[in-house]
Length: 288
Image 1 (spheres, rainbow, N blue to C red):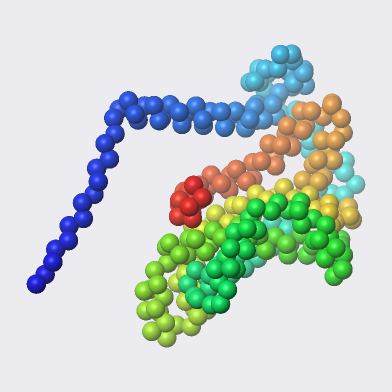
Image 2 (cartoon, one colour):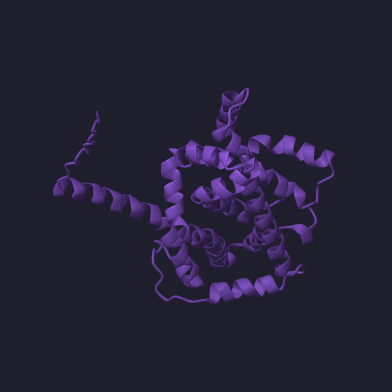
C-alpha cells in the first residue's frame, strides 16, 4: 500500500496597506542608518569655510577635491613612506584573514559533523567568548606576546586574528544547516579521506560563510592600529599613519573627513560585492 503525503503550504495573507506600512518603516530606518555615511561623504568634499558654517550644512555647496590633495601632500611629507604603512596593513589583512578562515573552518567542522567528549561544553565556551571585547584580554595578550618575544613583530597582530571565536560560531552554524550528513557518509563509503571530505565537499558548500568571515576579518584588520604591540615606526599600519595626520589640528578637519572616507571605502566595497552571501550566512546562522 502506498501512502501519498501532501504538503500544504500556508498562504501568507498580505494586504497592500500592511506592505506599505512595513516598506515605509524600513525606508525611514534605512535613511536614518545612512545619514552618518552620507554626511561623511559630503563633508569630505567641503571646502574649509563650509566645514565651519553655523548652523552646519548637511550637503556640500561647492564640492572640491582640495581635502584629498592636502591629504596626499601630507602623506608625501612623512619620513616613513606611505607605501611602507600600506604594505604593513596589507600583510596583516591578507595573512590574518587567510589564517582566520582556514582555522575557523577546521575548528567548526568537527563541532558540526562529529561527536566527541565535551563537545557541548566546548561549544558553550565558544558562545560565551562572544560576549568579551578585545579590551578585556588586552593585558594578558600583551604579557603573552612579551614573554614569547613577539613585541615589534607582525606575528603579534596576525596570530590573535586567527583565533576569533565569531568565525568558529558562524562556520559551525552554517555547516550544521547546509551540509547534509548523508552526503558526507556517501563520500566516506566511496573511500574519501577526512581531509578530502572537508576540503573538497564541505568547504565549497559553505562558501557563503567563509566569504562572510572574510568581510568581517578585513573590516577589523583594515582598521587595526597595532600600537599595543608595534612600537617601531616602520612596522606600524596605515590607519595609525593617517590618524597622525588627523591629529595635526583643527585646520586639518577637511583632511580628517577625507581620511575617514578613504578608510571606510575598502570595507564598504568588499561588503557590497559580497552582500548576498552575508545575508545568506546571517539567515542560516540565526544572527539575523
